[in-house]
Length: 125
Length: 125
DNA sequence: GATACAGTTAAACAATCGCTTAATTGTTTA
DNA sequence: TAAACAATTAAGCGATTGTTTAACTGTATC
Image 1 (cartoon, protein in one colour):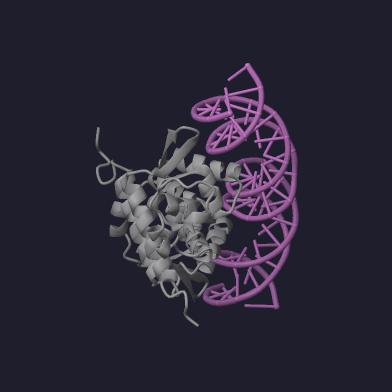
Image 2: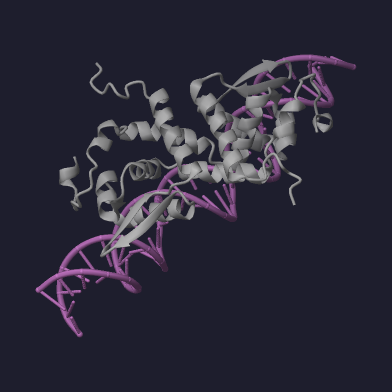
């Protein structure tokens, strides 16, 4: 593979590409990341990793209309990140119990801790 | 916080929100995820985590025009995920040496391994 | 059954995104 | 200095995205 590149600077680079994922694999991964690429959606997802809630309460928590929240929930559900359960008039959502969900959740917590130095010390000067 | 929600189902949910990140923190995180939300950009990023390359070679690797690749590189650089270095006519890009970059890279590898069962066994039936 | 409440869907719209082509900047070599 | 090559930028475009308002299901209660 490296030989048919336009430029051949003597970069040792062949062995890295032995385990290069396929284009479709990257597409699958980027679809997951895309879900977390919206600031509202990542907040909803985080909330649903920590509790099970109905649409009205979620709307209040993120400060948005229920159609807007419902729209985000639909996407998260289509992506397999959350599940829902109807109880009476209300529909309760929560994070799905899957490996990608756990990974994304953990990733969010780590990224917050790394990129937001004031996290955990809100009263810093 | 939980008490002023529209609905109060007896969900024990207060303690989870003691360490809920701020809205701006989620925005920072979603900006990072957004970078990985494009299938081409995540491929370029992965490549630059494994080798240093010039724009022309990157273009050949992902099968796109150099303006298109340059556009993606600009975004990744603005987000602090990659750095560049000029050497003669060529500009070499590589992943930045930062905690978020390492985290994202590791995350990509993990997600590929989890969501793409054929990964590592390309010759499966 | 009628009403009220919870949630979803639809239509419309502005905003953003990613790519293409074309022009421009920067660097090297003839 | 001129020509060739690498890379970036700009303008234009089609497509996608996120939100709003309004209409529409679904469930429980009166």
